[in-house]
Length: 255
Length: 341
Image (cartoon, rainbow over all chains, first blue to last red):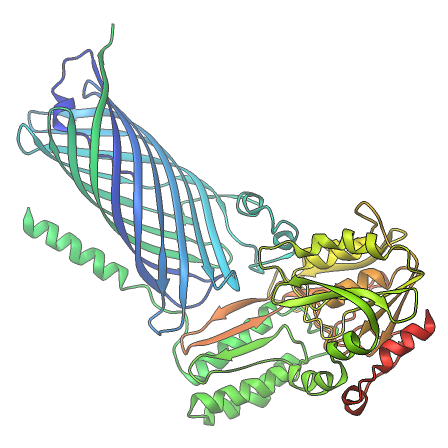
């Protein structure tokens, strides 16, 4: 999840001020997933997550944010037998520009690039599946200033187009066998452009932030739904909670 | 605000609970999934001349009358065993019981027909071993003969690239006038490994076979064939006369190994017909009743368009041990190979 939370302090800086921040944000995801290539049953479980991010606030009018999130855990079926390894990695880069503001709130809109990889593996790839995507999505962010130090931010994004990678009809075919020692080729070859009806991936995030002079603390909750209508469909609900520590760096006045 | 957050959380949890299994945990639903999955993905219906619709008509009434997991398991076992393809498998975690299609019959005979200790103790004058996954690759010289012997127990890969030792083995045996490669009871493994090793025994490039993978719901839906050539690779190749020993428990990647090498003029196959399970792309389906089910989705064909599926690789010279031979320390198959070389 993107962790697009921006603190109060940045917003009140002078018109020429740029504030950068580094973010470290550990968290926990709850995943509910059905990948028809993998199995006809639903797997659920918790996966620890770590986010590393960089953000730039350009005097409260424009926001940049880059984020890398990695999550690894075991998800299982309701019986005691099927425990699978779940790996998720995601990089996102977004730019937001202010469109409306008043004393207490601001609304930003912008665009986001998101690159994601989801891997499922059962017993040394006795069974496995994957989903990769490079997608472009509009993003809207609403920020409400509770007090001089506290704010609540909500954002929503959904892809309009994506380049996705999924297993072929067969799940594993000769292409996979030939390239079994080159995993990236398996994951990032044979990509397909998909849009609204084939790639459904709304993302919501709610962030509470508390600002200190040189840092910021945040608690965020996010929810995303992913549905990929490829030959074998992929469904995933993901609900996550993160605690974020943001260190403000390189504050400067732009000429 | 607090009530809105609670409402949002409840909504999220409710939405997550909406995701349901595609199949119910009932005997009929499980049977239907297995039958459908085979119907839409199995690659060997045509060469094995299986009328899959008729199979459904036979077994569905039995499933409808079944009440227990064991009854369903037995019905599915009988249905899948009819295909005699070891890449089709079923395992019940609850019953702690599983099988590969057609394997029971193979093991029953071949375990008694081959014993690696007989070879080591009675036919080799000195030998070395290399750990290959959980088994031992054995190589050395035949007693009182200038003949080499290599036993390849599997083509499995556990992270250690044991198969790359084949170049050193060939170097050690290159002074021999002939070589016996033993793939009896070789249960297969990775095609990467069998292709790597086979390339060290090839003298001339030849088209060996083609592979197609199912890409649609019809039994004839396959992607374009990928051709595989037996081609010499590596620093050195062993090109003196070679005899490959095989039996009915030579399976999967071991059969692919033989498909590559039987194209070569200096190589002869001695022993019994192989198992006939060629496809290398089996993977587990996990079912709601705790079963794991797997099937192969490929079709192997010879350059003339015919398929070894359902047949196996027929040896050039047919020889079999019986259990009494093995108990008495005799390996007639190996003796035949020594005689021929």
